[in-house]
Image (cartoon, rainbow, N blue to C red; front, side, top):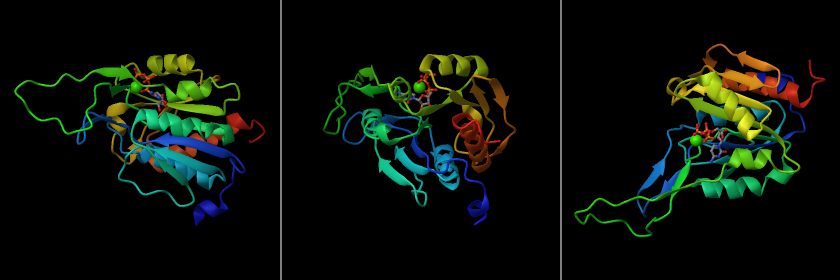
Length: 222
Ligand code: CTP
Ligand code: CA
């Protein structure tokens, strides 16, 4: 109820997001995935909704239920996530890539369950499309926000990632600290510089990101 009375800095904006991991099948019962609970992405979806945005959430497999008043599109693989996102970008003002997208998919996947036969199978990988970089390079790109979970050299790696993907705002955190937990310590990187935020609950981090984002999208907001 409290959120009802808060200012609505994203009123009228259409936000498209990705969240959760992707799952890349090896065979009928196995696959490669990334560690991601989806909690940060879902918290951000709720924060965008509370800020007045219409939210579409393209989600990989998570244990979380769809937030109230958020439109969720369920996907498994990175290629499916890529397709689902591209089908929605034309009607988005803001794109936020929170998903832990698998960097590779299995080329020689089997439709049937692989059986043991005395020799270990060889899994052949090929790179997945970079969803965030693709969206950011569209001619009429929405305002793009990326995430970077690093295990070391946080700011250097995140800054390089922001430049490489050409996104105006990047949220960086140390991977081992955030995974599966309810709190997070992030640093925001934008054209103006580096903005470290204190350790907070993911819901509060999400609200801080939305406030920062809203000011970049509309500089007239105080
Ligand atoms: N991302 C994406 N599509 C991919 C890989 C990443 O959209 N195929 C997005 C993520 O959702 C995140 C950002 O790009 O917003 C950074 O993801 P990350 O894995 O940290 O970056 P990579 O470019 O994959 O670099 P690396 O894994 O080598 O650090
Ligand atoms: Ca990656």
